[in-house]
Amino acid sequence: MPTLSSATTYFGLGLGALCAVAGLVLHGIEGGLLGGLVGYFLGKTIQSIFWTLFGGYTT
Image 1 (cartoon, rainbow, N blue to C red):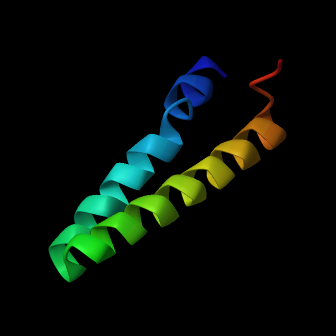
Image 2 (image 1 turned 30 degrees about the vertical axis):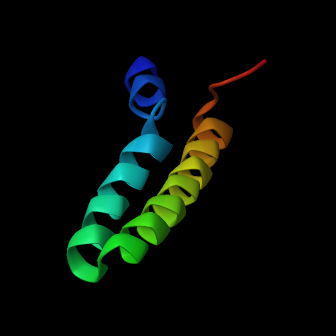
């Protein structure tokens, strides 16, 4: 599934940026930083689940 692997390559960064903007708008600087961190790690978790279920990144 090349579309899934290309979509999940930067999923953590994308979700982190999205959550950072939402946190910044809703709660200010601290909320933006916290939202970015939570979003990044949530995105990496979802990325790992995709790789486990559909195959993917191997080193």
